[in-house]
Each structure stands twice: as C-alpha cells, then as structure tokens.
Amino acid sequence: MTSTIEMLARRTTCASRLSRVQFDTTDNSNEETLVHSQDEADSTDEVGYGQANATYQDAIWSNYATSVGNALSGVPSGTPESALLQYYASIALDESNQVSTDGSDLVNEETQISGQEVTLGDETEAALVGQTNADDAAQQTEMGTLLSEEVQAVKNADADLTQAVGSGADAQAAYQTSVADAVAQFYQDKAAASQTHDNAVAAAMAAQVKGDASNWVAYLENNITLDQLNAENAADSDTMNAAVQAARVAELGGYGDAEITEATTIGTAEVTLATAQGADEVGLAGDEAQVADTLTGETVSAQETLGGAIADENTTDAETVAGDESDTTTNEGTEENSTEQGLAGEEVTTAGNLAGAQADYAIAVAQILAAAATGLSQADPSDGQAAFDALYADGYVTWLTDLKASFVADASGVAQAAATDEENLLAADVNLADQEAAANVNYVDGESPQAAQESDTLAQEGDGYTTATIGEKPNAGQSQN
Image (cartoon, rainbow, N blue to C red; front, side, top):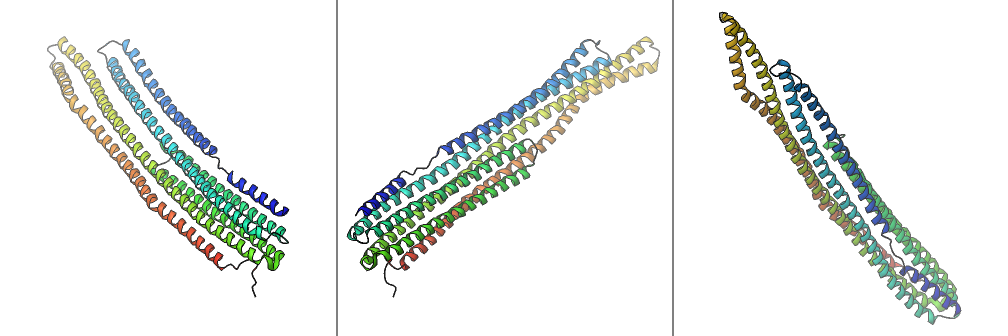
C-alpha cells in the first residue's frame, strides 16, 4: 500500500507539471519592435541622403546663378559680353529652379516609398507574430485537453489498481509511474518539436522580410533593375517556403519520435508488469491496456485538431502577407507615376525656358550688330552697302523676334514628347509590377489552402494508422498460446 501511495503522488506531481506549461510570447513582441526600429532607421537614412543630395545640387546652381549675376552687374548693357552673361544668367536661374523643384519631388517620393516599406515590414512582422502566437495557443489548447484526459486515465487506472493491491502492488505502481513518465516525456518532446518549428518558421520569415527590404533598397538606389528585384524577392520567397517545409517535416519527425519513445516505454512497462503479476494480474493488465488505448485515441484526435489549427493559421498568414505586399506595390507605383509626371512637367518647362534664353541671346547679339550697322550707315549716307547692311541687320532682328515663339514651342514639344515616352515606360513598369503582385496573391490564395488540406490529409492518414495499430495490439499479459 505504501508503494501505491508513492506512485499516486508521483503521478499527481507529473500532471501538475503539465498543467503549468505556458508558452512565452515576449520574444515575438521584441522581434516585432526590433524589425520596426530597423526599418525606421533605414527609412530615415534614405530620406536624409536624398535631401542632402537635393540640397547640394540646389546650392551648386544657386551659387552659379549668383556668380553670373554679379559678373553681369559689372558689364555695360548693349554689349556682346552683357548679352552672353544674360544668357548664362537665364540658364542658371532655370536650372536652379528645376533642380530645387526636382529635388523636392524626389525627396517627397523617397519619403512616401520609405514609409510604405516601413508599413509593409510592420504588417509582415505582425502577421508572423500573430501566426506564432496562434500556433502556441493551439499547442497550449491541445496540452490542456490531453491533461484532463490524462487525469481521468490516472483515476481509472487507480480504481483498477486498488483491486490488485497485494503481492503485485509494487509492480503495478512501477508500471503506472513508467506510463505517467512516458506520457509526460511525450508532451515535453512534442512541445520542444513544436517550439523548434515555430522558431525556424519565424526566422525564415524574418529573413525573407529583411531580404526583401534589402532588395527594395538596392532597387530604389538603382543598383538593380525591376526584373532583378522581382527575381531576388522570388528567390527569398522560395528560400522561406523551403525552410518552412523543412521545419514542418522536422516537427512531424519530432512528433513521431516522441510517440515511438512513449510507446516503447509503455510497452516495456506492460511486459514487466505482466511478468511480475502473473495470472492474478491478467485482468488488471487488460484494464490498464484499455485505458492506454483510449488515451492514445484521444491524443490522436487532439493532434489532428492541432494540425488543422496550425495549417489554417499558416494559410491566413501567407494570404495576409501576400495582400500587404500587393498593396505596397500598388502604392509605390502610384508615387512613382506621380513623381515622374512632376519631373516631366519640370523638364518641359525648363526646355522652353532654355530655348527662350537662347532666342533672347541671339536677338540681343543681332540688335547689337544692327545698331553698329545703323551707325555706319548714318556716318556715310552715300554708302549704299552700309545702308543695305543696316536694313538687313534690322530685318534679321525682326525675323529672330518673330521666330522666337516657334523656336520655344518646338523645344517644348520635343521635351514633352520625351516626357510622355518616359511616363508611358514607367507606367508600363508599374503596371507589370502590379500584375505580378496580383498574380502572387492569386497564387498564394490558391496554394495555401491546398497546402493546409494536404497537411490535414497527412494527419488523418497518420491518425488512421495509429488507430488501426491500437486495434490490432493484443492485451498486455494475455496468453498468446
């Protein structure tokens, strides 16, 4: 009787340990905060670099415009030198204005795109944390369910054990202790396998997020093309999927090893118990085997529920991340189109201004030459050639003045045509990126449920095999003759 009481105390302690198992989600939140901080820092660096470059370019042209203006102030008007300096001053002013406006547009675009990247990183990491926490909650639920079943199994076994107290009591106690220890070890091994799986999946997804962010930075800095960006992101996705699949295979292997260890330990205990008890314990051995079989069946059911919950959460996470990436691609494309339109407008305006400055310079030079020709003609009215040259010079000034509007319009038209081509090319690239992102969403929406269904099917097949094995197993201690 003393050994029986000790055995009951040990089993109660084991059940108490199981009931206190909790999963810690603190690391998940810390990882989410770290990823956000890193993305924010990268965004700040990119925007700051763009602003510094814009300020530098603006300062160069502003200083040049000031220098030309200072030089022009010291030159008499109506001279070729003043006309040339006026032409340079006009160009410098137009370039300075364009550089300032373009810099502002580019910095604004960089700010918007960087913000989108930070948001995408937050959403992806949040989805990953949500998946990990949901998986842990499902695991905790499974353990809670099986704990109550184990407690009931212990109570049933205790009732049977009470009837057999006597010469086989110590052997029965040892058997029950082995069973309880085996079950406890099974849950510990299973929980460890699940935790390893969660950590591997989280690491794989975090690596993908960092890889995608790095690829986007390289793309935005023009270090890689859009096709290379898409190829790099696809490679990162394939690597993540392979890591997740490998983690799942390892987890299933860990489950199998835990079940084998549990079954081996319990089987050995059953043989030892049957041998020690002899004929008097045959009935008790049969009862205990039935309890173990019932608990195993309940374990199979709980595992199937857990597998379904994890598969569904994986599906939801994949679909959420794909949708976030598609939205980010669309938003960034909109920003790129808007910026390109602004830059193109500035290019057209600057082209017209530069053409106007060139025309003004040509007219100013022609006016100087016309004034000189008029002076020569007036000095000697009898000189017919001088009079002709004066009339020709005045007519040339008039012709250039009349031609200015057409010259400016032609330059603006050429610039507008080039700008339209650039806008169309960018729009095509953005549309292609949107189509690829949408195709990825469709693929994930179709592939993830299929993967979840395959996982459920594998779990059901394994459950069927375990159930069939239980049904075929002979009662412990029963004669095989």
